[in-house]
Image (tube, rainbow over the protein chains, first blue to last red):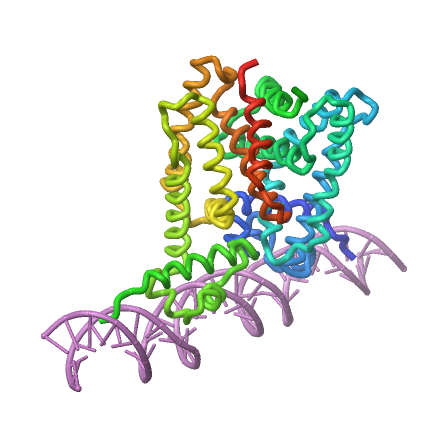
Length: 191
Length: 191
DNA sequence: CTTTTAGCTGAATAAAAATTCATCTAAATT
DNA sequence: AATTTAGATGAATTTTTATTCAGCTAAAAG
């Protein structure tokens, strides 16, 4: 027997992400995916039951990937600003580096394929940040604004940075990220 | 002769926007559009040469719609903060009220259909805001940060508000908008 | 009120895409 | 080294979707 080749799965995922970035989930066919991944169309069906299963599997993978990066190096015992900055940088770096994945999540969330469960999982992965924001409010370090909207403010800015890096081909140097962090920080910090 | 019915065009657009919101540009067929717009599939082809033409026309319309709303009531001679607040509110209200259109633009921009020209047009429509930001910097009212990134910060927050209003079914009262504006303003204002 | 013309319909056709499958490898087991 | 079994292939098939069209309808023009 010949074993399944994990590299093939990776190649399929990579092909999907690249094509969706270029042409949207709307514009891709299984043939294109196969061609991009350098394999026969039939091979796709050895690894995934059908197109829907492929989209679902990749979405799950991307969502798990986000979750695994959000709180890297985060120490809940550190001072508020330190912890917040760590998470902020984690998110922005992830969005920039794995922009294709973020885009894919966005598009697949609007497809008929993805379950509410998966959508919930993504939302849940931000919970520790909500906890931290609450702490910041308790400690009077940040403004007493509903966390739902404060998170919108924080995440929105980050998303747009990633979008611009990728669409306008801009470099986001450490310098640029720190400046942007400052904008965000000045926005949320208590008067 | 029977004249073309502008209401039909509107119905088609409305159907598209609703369906794309629900299922993504990926997930819709001409039959679905026709059904949603309460007409025969053949009728679609009286008003639009084909699917691509429909997507392109609707994208153009949505882009022009944004442009026509951005600077409503804006007076370039007013004090900086007044002008900025006007534009900020215009954008956020437009994004919330016409969220389907924003979403459609996003998706169609990732389809193989839309021209760079159209993409440029959308970008250009923000030029007066860039001008205003420059003035704010000259007058030392706001931070001396590259307008490209400052705009990312401003627009990002707005986008995410609209997204959350629509996905999480939240009301964005005047109160909420003002609070969010304050976050943005505190972020950009000079130290 | 008749004619004319263009819109409207939805079943029929064409085109495109997903999925299957007979055949052919290549890896693992004996 | 031979055998077995599952992966790999890509053309063939099925399914889905876009597009067309012959017949029908309604508005405008005369």
